Length: 487
Image 1 (spheres, rainbow, N blue to C red):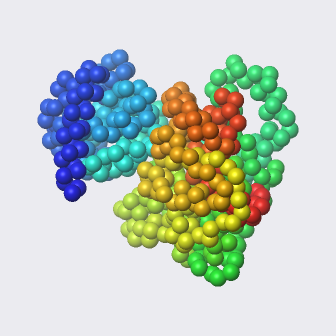
Image 2: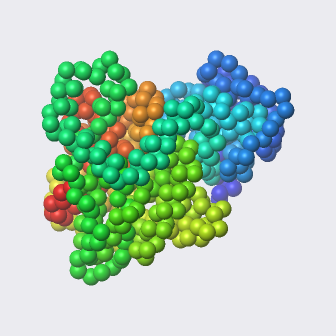
Image 3: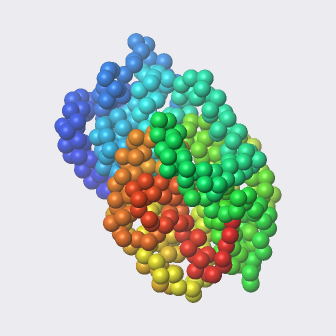
């Protein structure tokens, strides 16, 4: 059956590729035999520079580079079935900003025909959202997420400023509880002192376009001015069913403390002893997505050390991006003799909160919530972890709640970690149809299982003057349980 699906996919993809190629004027020599890595159909080398005004940088004598996960490049047969699912291709209609176009560019780099520091290679690699919608669409099972992260890991920082920013923001800030607490307290003080209203009302930041956009992304922050530390241990209520450990997150722990408390309360109400190790660190997702693989490896090893001491049955995550990353520790550390087996065992225990609740199964809530709700599939939950039905099952279990499906619920909202900061124009292009689809549902609440999605959706709705609440599924379940959780 898989072979039949693959054959049909390739045939359909070739037909789609012809249409797409004619549309963009790129077909040309697209069906020439490939060279270097495998003899598969390849798009012309112009694809590496499409939309940039000149040809890709090539060398007279190819000098292959050490490309991580190089063998995975052979999986792509360039059928084109991924194109209509790729947010950047949908927005730009450029082959170089499609999954197969990017994979072709990776092959050029791996074969030494394009340098890893080529500015156009950098541009197209970092314009990818790493949403993995292409993985869901691909009949060949191409592991695109691993490929795009491998490609970014060999791209050097563009300049000294970027190098310092990576070290400070990704290497230090996200793994320092003291610094993150300062960010959380400062942001709440900014909002609750009236300063934010003054800044927005007077247009003070209008001349500073980049800073104005970053300020507009700040969500309405939960909890007290100084968030209370999460309990290191919360006992199960009633019969003990499991011993679980919670990843509290880095930025999410400061911006969404009530969601962490809801997670603990709901798990305890369903018979779980919940441990939240205070010495845990950032999961490493933002670092790995940004190309800083060494920092991601260091953080992964640290979390394995910390969570192993708890000896949990499961490791629970309420952030889709973090959960997807932690489920991939086994792949990330597969060549580390000291951690390979431990990482595989660790990843096997990781569960999204909605996934674990349905596995338990969870107790149906009895309190009625009269809400019209729509659900946004977080990319790293739907495409990365293949979890789609569990959050919906939780929402449908709540008495009085009406779940209304939105169009293209599994299309990216444009948040993608730090993408809405580093690629603001593209992020807004991708966000616009998402907001339109949310509004079309006439929902009171839009729900997503990822803090980045909630920040992006709240921003998009607020900027358009639309009053629709944003929430995590576990927040609504806690409310339906009558738990009265506070941050």
